[in-house]
Image (tube, rainbow, N blue to C red; front, side):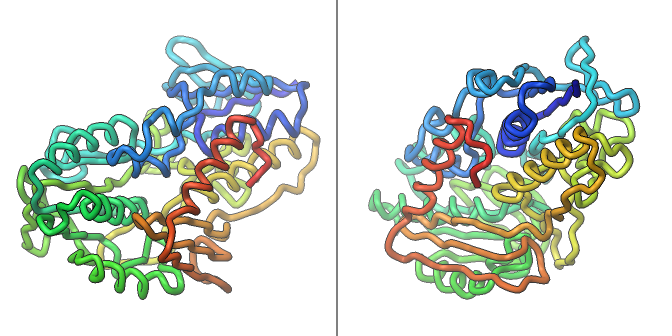
Length: 400
């Protein structure tokens, strides 16, 4: 009987645990560790500040879900991985494993920039706690509106949510009749609008260059923050942008457990993996989703990260679980699916509009990529949210 441990309980982690149980049956022991008791549908955090979603609307308790599938659930954080000994440490207790999947998600760097922190005047939307704090600041702002700055730090892997928050913010200001009092500036490290950390998608730059001026939003590309004060965002170009309200998407690194473990991760605490998602030094360890290292193959004037969420996270988890099943069954030929070649399927909510992006490969070179704008409704992301939470609640991990 093989012992398999999955660290992480969100997109990649939950998919890994459920797929392992589905494919292996009940003849092997599977344990899932998660520092959170709930699955969180992260893409909907952009709506929490505006009251369009409550946190309870986008979370699902993990324990009953995975227990029903026959997976042991432990709601504690792993503090160390002893790869050579095939052991993970949780508090003062050690757990042995034959195979390990690391799906730990991001460790957000809130203090990357001088003056930027959780205690600064800048808001964030990357966790339930930060989204709820942003809601408080939004409710205060609408009583006394003024200048707004929304942007992305250099190196951030999450430019997409910044665009979504930007358009939703602008739409809510129009709905409340305060838009004329609100001057909005958007800044991004992207070399052009719509780069998104993946080199752009056919049509993305053209559409965004039309949308931002149409909504009277000023924008700055190749932006790099020098420092943040209580009233200004100061760029390295010397430009000072005043704000009364600001939301910035920070960058992230890998989980603390990776950086706290010997010879396990890169300098940024991601797992160095090959195309089977096996660790390059320890083949019984797999890194999936955000936890997997994805070296950047392009260079930009200002550093920008590559997104590894959504469909890419789900597919990397399914590839890793398939390979563990093959290894347990004595097979040597493993499935390969480089993350850089996984198709990109994304829905960008734009307030009362939306953009659907489809590519045959996350990163270039590609054979096909297109952005399909929907200027009439913003229904697709709402439908996808309902579908995915339905899928999670029922444990249907094999579905896309």
